[in-house]
Figure 1 (tube, rainbow, N blue to C red):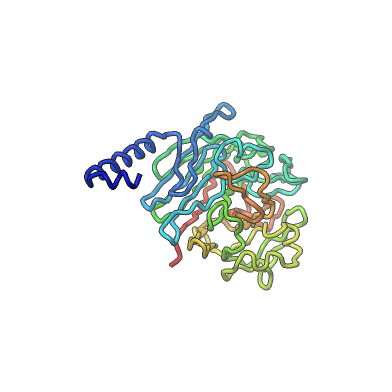
Figure 2: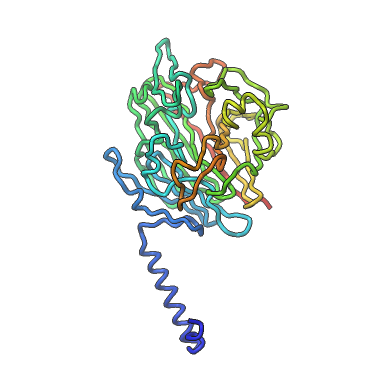
Length: 392
């Protein structure tokens, strides 16, 4: 090829290259069934998601901003599939784990990748709670406990799309009275916005026609080295918190508050996740690592309560929330064996972390925890922001 080009005039070479580039551009523009994830090697095929589930249409939606950041979401479970943000080398990195086909999200035992979690994020002990003297029995899907809304929580529902623009996606779902054992018909709306400063803002809103409990969150798995990287133990983590809610051996809070000072749970100063994770600590043994709720040191309103940093990519993620608690999960139950991730990547042990903003686990059974009760006539509203930047 090089010898042929040398034999052509300069003008001919320019025309040939221009024609080649135009053809490539047309092929790319014509591939309407593919969503390119930044400049990474992964492309998501829309056809792998454009399916009908429970009589409702599933699709992919891409949010973009002027910094070439992007977020890909499916209305199946409101799942965040990809978050592509700038890195220190001037390129882009996908920092969210996920799958490249719908069926992988539907496998029993799937780990809630990227999902909206509800009605109740985290665990409720023995799946029971009482309101006004009446006891409600929830679905048990975590041994003797209920986890993340039961066997068929919000993570497995097809959400209605109320609005879809270049940088915003508004999803809604009506949870019927008695669904998964919860009282009241709950009308839920979740809004995803990709902002100009590379923040993913998530606004939650819900109303009910009967007294109930609500605790919504998002379950995105992050690796700031890039999804598919083998570890998150090299990440630096800061959590502004004075205590955790210690748990029993089924990961249900005891009702106590345990000060973090002098323990492996003190992240008030940035600390590598892997530095103390293997410490001989009873709480760490229960969760096989970090899988606990931090009692945040914060005032009312939006406040930055955590940040994570990867020296490998230079990416920092700040967590900004109105919630009183934060579940930090260090990927202790990941094995890499269940399903391949995007592009066939394996997601092995501790290759991702979750930072789930929330009210405390099992709050309905602990009067000393912040209340999660929602009454008719009131509106549940909360906002969480994951802000991405490059540390200079």
